[in-house]
Length: 260
Image (cartoon, rainbow, N blue to C red):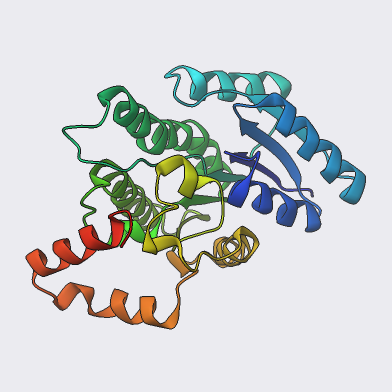
């Protein structure tokens, strides 16, 4: 039986690569993003290359009503979602008190509220069927506070801990939840968030590599998938819990400052 995956933020980057990987496995897709033209292009590519069913839904998850509309549309069409991949998200750099609150509020809406709402809407059916997989795209930013990206890092901490808690709640139900935690990835995120001029993105990894690790971890029911880190970054991640917090905060801020 074909497994259908719903992927948000599917029009580019990690989301598009996850869609390609799922299509390569013969799975059906529901692709969600703001830009219908990009979704159409990806749909045509996937259907031409893999002959899988692909449905597109153009929705902006910054709209509070979007998750319910997505759910209602799929319920009306009888489309069963076997895999939910909450990939949509964005970031932004700057001092919190100087940033536009509307931008940070939108970040919270997309990164936290929409992700949680979609999970709440689709999870009951998975539990009832004793089968399902959820992949929530977090970040290694979840492992630490993020001066100059205070809201973004906090949203990703939410995604990771929310995913972990659900995984334990669902133990024994047949449903698994995986948090994908990539390091710097070569997508449009860096330019959008203003991080492309910082040292954090000097060695960004291809989105395909991140997507492959996340997809494999999801299939295995892995709790956390940390990927896309250099050996030095992996070492830093391991020692981070042992550093004095003030030292850690200063180091993170310096890494995020333009020109460093």
